Each structure stands twice: as structure tokens, then as C-alpha cells.
Length: 455
Image (cartoon, rainbow, N blue to C red; front, side, top):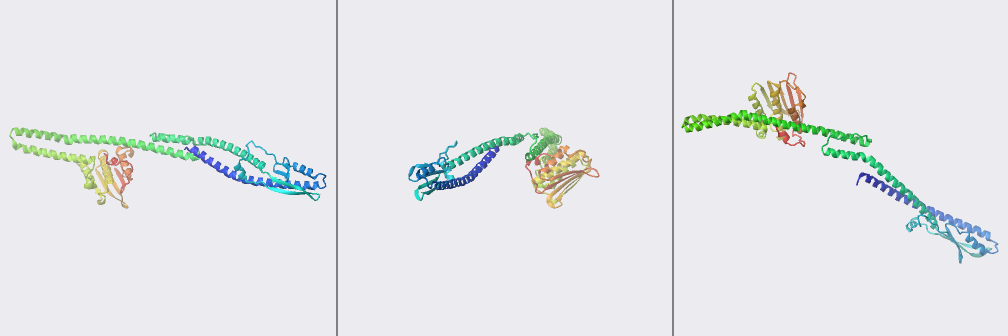
């Protein structure tokens, strides 16, 4: 059931309850009023009979005058007057009619006013002349109350009908902004985060409008950030593939070619039965295979540090340093890993590893440093937090951190585990990157693959 009809239903219930209570009060008042009216009519009738009897003293025909007295009560609304023993001497009230019909039996029982009777003995000139019977008849009075009740009920029904109609119209108008807000929420549910509600609303709904617009703005920013992150991941994946292809071409391809040449030479020497020369070629093949094994291990370590749980964070970071030391021997590396930070759990270890990997890679490729220092240590309050700091003496940060894909990726990784990342230029030149991670990390809804993915 819609909110509009619920409101109308509640108001209708209030009207019904008010009608029941009002009816109970009116019936009580009406019962008292009819009872008072009947008592008054009976007293007036008694007084009229007594006064008339005094006037009949000394009358020539007392019986005729007595019948005339009874007849004088014709037209009285509430009294039935008769002369005992004389069927012709009866004055009954005329039955009135109402446009709403006779009062139903339940209404008469609700009013509950029973007829009362009084008998007056008549004595004229000292002789008993008969008995006058006066009886109240509440029919006409109850009919009058019934008519008033029906008129009031009709007026109340018309009022309630108009009130409900006005409430229906005005609540529809008042609830129309909620319909538009529901439509806006449906658009947001389909991914349209640019939806805004701009119309002027009352104070009760304006807060809801402002909260809705703030929510959609945040959703739009998050959606834009997710798209940028997705583009970044795709770009980094392609970059990693190019690096792997280059390494395979430069480091593995020549040795495969050399192995092929050695095998051809061995085959040729076997045909020529020059077996003494084969040993040198076999040794060359072994050296080539050993070199390729080392290169493949390095590439696997770059793709995923699968050995973190076995070798520990310190050795994994040492492999990163060794990788770049062979390619840039002029750079000095200082590595300090606290023993208690060796195995912090898969999520924290991978996050720290990737941060170090990205920072060292950025420094070597873009900053031209002569020294890079790597430190992983507990926070100031112990292992409830771990601090990783990577500093170099290169050219420092030249643009906003959000401009570089690598820095965006590090921010995302750190935020994913509930940490914080700060980047500052060092006074003497170079850049310092500090990542503070809670232990154990507080993971959000982002998939774990985002941490274990390529840097």
C-alpha cells in the first residue's frame, strides 16, 4: 500500500474513532435530555390537571368538563392523557415523521428512556369523579434526537469526504518530490552518477536532497577513480609485458640461440668423430642454461613474489635490490629490515614488497640517484603498525603524486589495507616515501588480486 493511502487510512481511522466517541457522548447527552424533557412534560401535565380541577368545582356538568379537559391535551408532543374507564376520553400525541425515517430500535435502546405514568384522582364538590392517567410518550422526542443525529452524521460524512479528498490531493503534491527522488535513485542504480536533484524543497526534504546530491557526487568521483585505476592497471600490465618481452629477447633469446649453435656443433663434431672438442660445447650449454634459469627466476619474482612466505620479506626485498644493482652498479643501496617485520602476513608482506618495488623502480628510472635507502620497522607503539620508508638522493618529486600511475597504484594499495602514504621532498634533494600499515591490515571490499597484481 502506498504512503498516500496509508496516511488516508490513518486519518479515516481517526475519524471513525472520533465518530464513535462523539456518538457515545451524544447518546448520553440525548438520553439525559429526553429524560429531562419527559419529566418536565409530566410535571406540566400534572400541574395543568390540578389547576383545571380547581376550576371545575361547582360546575353544572363535571363529567363533560372533565372530558373537555382531557381533550385539551390533544396535540401535546409528549403526553398521553386518558380518563380511566372512559374509552372515548383519550388524548394521544400525534406521531411525528422524519425525513430519515423512524428511529431504529437500537437507537431507542441506546437512548433508553422508558415511558412513565402518573394517576390523578379527581374529586369535584367532594365527590370522586374519576381518575386521570398521564403517561409520557418519548417517541417524538427520540425521533427529534434521531433526526439531529442523522443531520450531524451527514454533515460529518461530507466533511470527512472533503477532508479525505483534500488530503489525497495535497499529500500527492507533497509526496511528488519523493517520486522524483525514487526515479533519480533508479537512475543511480543503473550507473548514472551524474543525476542531481535541483528543485526547491521543504526543510524536511531539503536535507534528503542535499544528502542525495552529495552521495551521487561521491559515487561519480569513485567511479572516475575506478576507471582511472582500471586504465592504470591495463597500462602497467602492458608495460610489464613489454619489459618481460624485452628481457626474454635480450637475456634469454641470445642464450637459446647459443645453445642451438652448440648443439649443431656437437652434432657436427660427432659426425666427424671429434669427441674431444664436445666437452667445451657441453660446458657452454650448461653455462647458458644456468644464466637463463637465473633470468627466469628474476622475472618470476617480478611477476609475483611467491616466495615471500618461505624466504621472508627481507630476502624478497634483497632480490629487488640485486636486480637493479646488476643493471645500475653505480647506485649504493642501504637495506634495513627489522627482524619482527620479516613475516607480517600475506597481505602486509605483498603490500610492502610492491611499495618497495615501485619506489626503487621509480627512483632508478626517473630520479638519477646515487644512493637509495630502504627501511621497514615497527611503528612507535609496536607492531600494531609497520612503517616502510624508501628514500633517495635524486631529483625529487617534480609533479603532483596523483599524476603518475605508479604513485596512484601505491596510494590504492595502502588505502586498501587501511594505511596511509606520504611523499615528501628531502631538504638535500631526493624523495622520501613513507607507508604506514596497520597490522594486521584492514582489508576492504577490493579484491586481493589488486594487491597481488603487477606493479
